[in-house]
Length: 602
Ligand code: ADP
Image 1: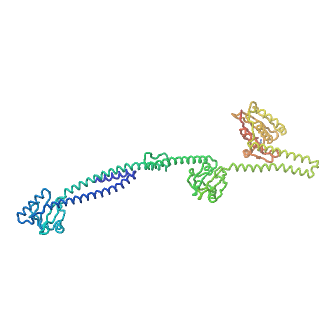
Image 2: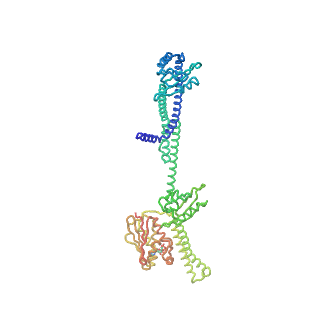
Image 3: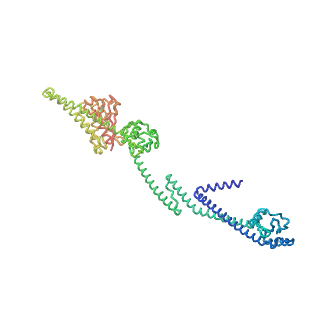
């Protein structure tokens, strides 16, 4: 039992080991079955032919023995003749290792080489005798030792007068033995042939299966994206051709994949470097691709969005509407939306259905137009402000000019006052236009500054001189601090002059009679701090952040009255930043203002 289990287990193990060589197994099975059939049929035929040949020879030898035993004197005339017959039969049979029996017509044994014939019963019912009675000859096989048979051959003689039978029998054992040994030799030959067949099959098929296995492994690696496994080179014949073609295909594929990868990398880095957000959406509304800018602009809800539904990644209704519109329309769709984040960005979206039938999806390009829109708004405000600023003096000029034309020109009492008004408003217009030109020049970025080391003292002194009359007229004390000497800045002289003039002009304008304005300068690490401090009306903290904007005035009426254009501080701010410095204000309503300018020091 144990032996059977272990045989079964070993067979399973062998089959399992052969599994990688399924082709070999098939070859062995097919060849084995065919070979076994051919061998079995051949052996069976050979055995049959041999058996027939032996049987025919055997029958002939029995026939010859029987013929030799036909008695000359028949039937025996007396007892002595019968005894002679018995003796001659016994003599004849001994060297032939056969049994000879002489029987009369009734089947009674007359002589028998095996012993006393009277002891042998009547043989008339034996099949060989029945056949001999009918046809002259009969043969039967029976009565052998265990595992052996005797062949009985009977022949009829003296048929015309008084028939009798000679029966010769012999053992079939030597023939059986010869047949057995022939069968064993044939089986041994067949087994040897099977071994040769197995060996030949292995020699032919194993290299094939090995090459096929290596090709399959290489192909599997290629499907995983690994193109490094080369095809086997040691195969022969058509397999070698196949391996060569496969190797060529592998190298070409590897090169193509590499090219595609490089292209894709290039494309990804180009798209990644774009400031526009690019998102590709498939017809199932899933995100196929999104670059970094898209993540920031569209504020994706999750970090990993590729393959996710757009609805999950983006929580902005208008974006979904734009995408749906693009899916439905032939033409590209544009829309501007306001971002949902704290910065409230304005995002322009351009969605277009990708060409193809069916279309592979929609490409959404988004860019941040917040700055553009802000600038547009500023421009509109600026135009409105300029128009408004120009309108007021022009209206006054027009009104006075018309009044003069209507006859007031001859009104000696008032005509001069009218003309003075016209001249004043024209001066205001002139100032406004000069300031606007300054703003335009500075903001355009085309203004060329001649940056050079400048001693600060002469610039401050000349400013004091220029504004001394104005200050005096207003009874404002205009002074400079003590530590001016030796201070040098790195700047453009004209620009610094304009900065100081604007600040000093404002300080005098917004300081009531009897007040003070002081210019203080001080070195500060790599900078020089220039302060213009006054004891004037001051600026409420609500306005301090906005006074540097164009046309921003705390008190419009007062500014206009004082001849202000609302552009002075905006010009200061632009000039200071163009020189690489900063400007700030420290002020309290009623407590005076100090404007602090910091410029690079030499
Ligand atoms: P303006 O021509 O009206 O003076 P600016 O741009 O120079 O325009 O100044 C903007 C506004 O800032 C002024 O209208 C005024 O309200 C305020 N301002 C500027 N300088 C001072 C100052 N030294 N004291 C108080 N308010 C000031």
